[in-house]
Amino acid sequence: MDKKLLAMLACPVCKGELKLDREHQELICYTDAMAFPIREGIPVMLAVEARTLSTDERLDQH
Image (cartoon, rainbow, N blue to C red; front, side, top):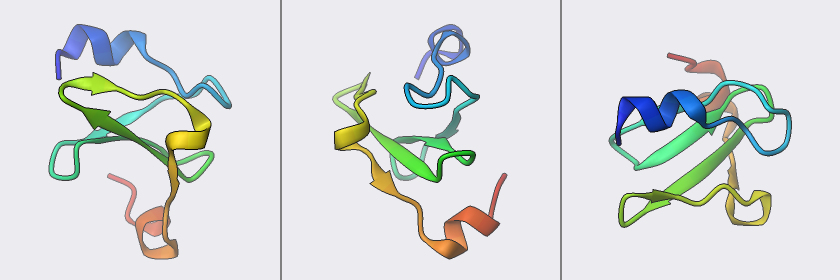
């Protein structure tokens, strides 16, 4: 994912910072414990499409 695009994106729920998880192709909001998928290179920034982070993932903030 392009770094410029990532810098412009914010969590649609809290407007906070997102972290890129390249391995799982997701954008992570640790504040809301949500992971937004990236499909075919396009971030899906819909709360209904996001998954909730597990407890382990919440604790493993990079």
